Amino acid sequence: MIEYIKESYNELRNHVTWTPLSEAQRLTVIVAVFSVVLALATWGVDTVFSGVIEQYFKLIKG
Image (cartoon, rainbow, N blue to C red; front, side):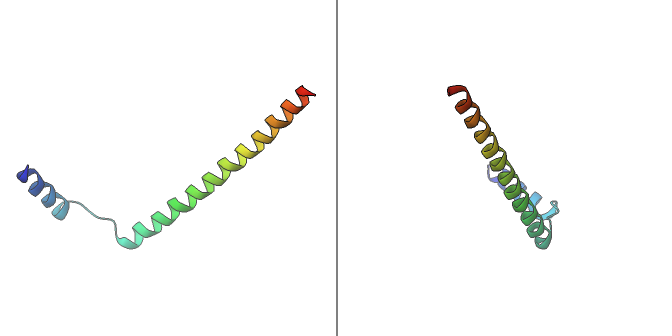
């Protein structure tokens, strides 16, 4: 187990290419913005379909 941890640490330290912090922050903002936009779009579609279904059932009832 100790050898595995040592090798893992060595791999992360010497062989992994890390994304620069500025690029990681920029990409994080892009993902957050698209997540909010997708959530709003989903909410909008859900609201519209809920209204349509509500009107449909009101029409059928009476």
